Image (cartoon, rainbow, N blue to C red; front, side):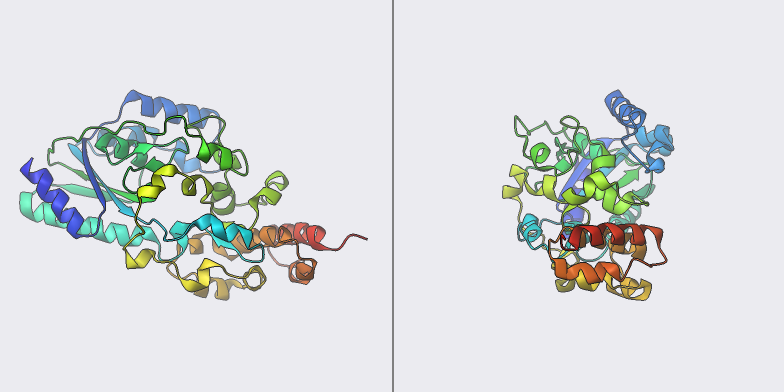
Length: 344
């Protein structure tokens, strides 16, 4: 118990907002849920989810020496309602987590500090993960009591709502497990009902192929036309199901400077973003998670949003990209032009 409390205190001093402990194991329900998800093809093009499922569902298969898992959370709760920006049709909306630096780098650095401190104090072995290995982060977090998986499948915390970044430390140090967190969603359906693309076939089930976050980030080809109008002006990710969670009312705005939104990304003009070449895209999104999708997919997203802006005066912006070298950009430009050109 003393070691656990020392680790908890050290983690808090490093800026982590939530800390929980569990043994290095997951229940059979996790394996069954993942198998069902993959069997229905709801992972779409994310083939990595189907790889190494044994390691994903069993921490000790990933690392046989592991005895405990420490789950750590860092709040990125926004100061303002992220859905407010959806009404400004000439501006692009970027998901809250991507409005500044890539969280992976910051959290991994903090985890390494904590892990190194543990090694020096107890001479134990450790492995650090931040969404970079076959680790079932949300089920592990639920086992530690950090939160529970809500009906939108995202982790929900009574203290931080739906706004927690997660990281894990696997260790050979044996720590007393915390009690799992019970489900507190009750009869609420807000996250299900607000989804613009009906990406939830049932509560606690997500079909990524219909999810705006998947379509604008993970999907590499042209976005299916059936979803384009409902994407609105979301150009990277979607916060709708997270933002309406009632538990967010208990969350205080993140105090981490690296998670504060950059002014140039909070409501950028679609017309300006559509004109980005590769160099301009890389310069704007240096150290941002947006950078990983590349200029072509990003401008594809921007053109879909431009086609939804309802302003015929923007048609020239889309027309300028009809001969773009990228197939996905040309396809999105054609669609935007058809949407924007005045009716005869």
